[in-house]
Image (cartoon, rainbow, N blue to C red; front, side, top):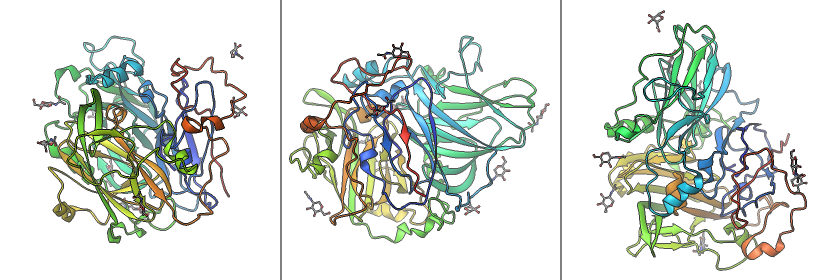
Length: 528
Ligand SMILES: *[C@@H]1O[C@H](CO)[C@@H](O)[C@H](O)[C@H]1NC(C)=O
Ligand SMILES: *[C@@H]1O[C@H](CO)[C@@H](O)[C@H](O)[C@H]1NC(C)=O
Ligand SMILES: *[C@@H]1O[C@H](CO)[C@@H](O)[C@H](O)[C@H]1NC(C)=O
Ligand SMILES: *[C@@H]1O[C@H](CO)[C@@H](O)[C@H](O)[C@H]1NC(C)=O
Ligand SMILES: *[C@@H]1O[C@H](CO)[C@@H](O)[C@H](O)[C@H]1NC(C)=O
Ligand SMILES: *[C@@H]1O[C@H](CO)[C@@H](O)[C@H](O)[C@H]1NC(C)=O
Ligand SMILES: *[C@@H]1O[C@H](CO)[C@@H](O)[C@H](O)[C@H]1NC(C)=O
Ligand SMILES: *[C@@H]1O[C@H](CO)[C@@H](O)[C@H](O)[C@H]1NC(C)=O
């Protein structure tokens, strides 16, 4: 499944808990991906139900609206996919499961923010960092006014909890830490990791981690939970820190004193070394009972290599755009996947270049021609001055290497060919590269994008088309509730029953031509 689906914004955060089942009837499929290349936008006032089977992944994910900068308005929620009963957790059952969303936050609306981005205006310093949508605990009387509502997490002494932490923000990398408590990393984006203690973790936009946290302090007071921006060096950022409270049931009083120290922003290798230290537990079972590591990715021959270079926003024909290999993605009015299904020519080209070409940048609907069952190596080379994170839908990929400087063929000598973690979102530091390997065993048209909303909105995305040349009986057909638009809009029947949205906080744009992705209910079939 994809870790991303569209949704309708309600005032509540929705948490979905799904139990993974052993089933073979359906494969995960891109009809349920909720991005502009696979699904028509859900018109305002409509409802649409996503149906998919979860099979290949366990762990912590989240969903969010994928169009028009709407994620900046909220509307995200967690998805937890549990192990099947026959597969043991690689750790003791935690006492509780706590989902934490950390995010940069602006008082400007998502529409104002996207106007700024269209005009080449930097997003600037956020107005705050929110934790589960709430403001900071007033740890400094001079920085914050009284009365800000903050998050309190209640715990029992001596118990161990699983914290699932997601950076659902717009564009800010955040450092997450809990005063006096270790974070025992156990899972990231569907893979069990080698279990290691960290005193803090850099979590980049779109990334998800599970930590086990043991309440092993003496509760002389409450403890701070902190999410602070990384790689910023202006004093304007001092106020921009998210602070929540960890409250033991036997706590003697409020948290006090200075916040726990962040890592040194100028130690450039700290964050990269931390990222490199996150490894796959090759002996743990996950979605399947056999060990994760039995898929020996290091021994598979690479069939396709893409070196994908991003650049900071630049003017192309008088408008601001970001590019990957010199191409800024132009979303067609008919989704790629529908165009493919109905054999409509001319909607997209399978000519995305595997290197930066020496030609002027352009705006185009150019996608990667993937080879079904091929093994692809992608090197992201970040030519921007800020951290970018890249996500591939429909797959988990192996993060095998990262370093500063320009990637060369010799860089392959540094790859981790044994226990690089399989995940779906990786950071690429400025002036650095990150290499991933991915087995293209899932037919579909899959979105590859920057998770930083400003980069994504200006065109930093592409798609990978993966076609099974044989007629595949198990491939999921076009769903009955597919919405039609663009060249195919005449196929669309009007939705008879409109949803009464009163009472919900809609982020629907008032203009009829602008659509939002809407989800009212998410139904997961369980195949026993
Ligand atoms: C992690 O730290 C906790 C104390 O907070 C300790 O009990 C545990 O043994 C450590 N685990 C590892 C794998 O280092
Ligand atoms: C336990 O609490 C006392 C104050 O009651 C404090 O002085 C001491 O440092 C605390 N110990 C730990 C391990 O936090
Ligand atoms: C931090 O400062 C350095 C040098 O003063 C500058 O090059 C860099 O762009 C600054 N970074 C940010 C994120 O402001
Ligand atoms: C890896 O997973 C196994 C369970 O399959 C567990 O026993 C072991 O402790 C884990 N190893 C590490 C280093 O986390
Ligand atoms: C795409 O790749 C397939 C092999 O995977 C090849 O047969 C086909 O010709 C390619 N299409 C284009 C337009 O390059
Ligand atoms: C971007 O590329 C240019 C030209 O190759 C190079 O001079 C510059 O150092 C690069 N910047 C980063 C941040 O990689
Ligand atoms: C959603 O739409 C379907 C028809 O497509 C309708 O049957 C259903 O009742 C609607 N649900 C709600 C909550 O309005
Ligand atoms: C929508 O629901 C609200 C509150 O439940 C109700 O007052 C209103 O009449 C409903 N509107 C329609 C068109 O049914």
